[in-house]
Length: 324
Length: 256
Image 1: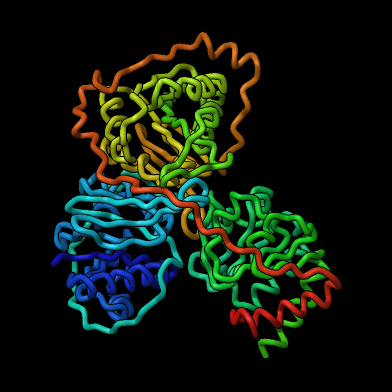
Image 2: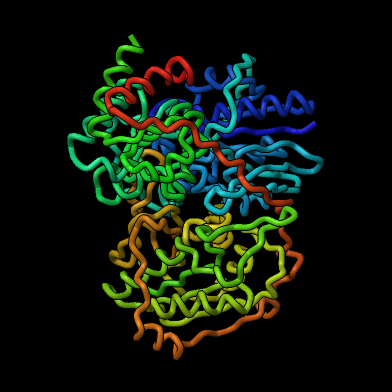
């Protein structure tokens, strides 16, 4: 019997859904193999999240609470996770593949002399390690990979697993943590946030994504209106984030965010391979484009050939009717 | 500032790919400089042009990788070290990081920079592994760099916003391709690159034991990603098709 540890990421005072997806999967693996599943939460208000974590079946929750964790910084996070690993001694430590995770995963593996598989779309336990599927080559190819060793780190793409509630009463273990400012190494000077009310794309159930076809403020207004109606996150292709029309954190694609919402509406996006690599795992894809030969139509479940400025107003109007 | 930029030769992922018996067939003619590394080279060159200093590239790879190194030299890097491998080694990110750590052990520099990931495996581990092995302050996914009073100011793309991070030197940074458009080498640069020093180093001469480089992850096989089937295309009066699809999203796809 061994321990599967799951990292619970916090953003904007909430547990990230992608972390709970990973915890749900780990709970299932643990039940199948007779292992224990535990969780760790590192945040300035870490203890307030224990209740939410218990709902997903962790039998023990490690809590590392310190003001230094108000914003993401790799040095203190690494120190905290290394400390928790010493206590928990996990055979597998699973993460949601967020930018925060990507920032520390390699360093933590080197620090702990652990094997590591990043950004997998699924994983299972095997004798002495894990086996995982990883999208590679701009997500055109799936590599079956395995990692072996006493300690394995793995990060999982958001949307890879469904949430499964599994109420338990978890034991809480508070881990002492302190860090001298001089040991921080790097200094976080400032955070330039995307406007406060935007929905985290990795967490969004629906996404409306704008591409080159969205040419002006009128187009952006239509995008916002549609997103608001569907309670959807707004994403953008690289063309529009580079042009400064949308914030760089909203870029979807191989370079930007990799998303897999229930509904993805690509508006004025041609469907270049770099963009498709970031959204092809969406459940339902709708494409609106005036070019009937745009590659986006090859992967769209519903393709509307037409000028987005003429299509979106009746589309929004009809969705309003459907919703009411 | 003295920059070392670690670069890698990778398959062109935008070229057609072929899988045979679970193995990826790599066309030797379609090997390129990793796009993220090209951005790291570009940014180092920009900072050198602004503040002075030196840009040296380091590449681990088989003999063919010298072509990739020449490209970086043609862009404007001053010199290069090629850590030569046989080409049939089974290295993972950890192996590469350990070779680089050994190489940099006795080197002097201000900034080690790398692409944030390699465009073939998209793993993104080597940079932070290297920083940890060398005990360097670091940041990843940089979208902008600036040098100021001997410090490196990094604009990093985080989960919900951009973080401005100040790193003392020496430090390590991994670069996104969103920070710049890497220059295309011109004829003068290409000619000059042929006269620039490229030192070849054998891994064995770094004093590293092959056992230490053993990968603890491996690829068992490759398969094509099952293609998404194209759904239905709706053409006609925008008003009509828009309303039709909106209704289907509710009644057929159940996503509203």
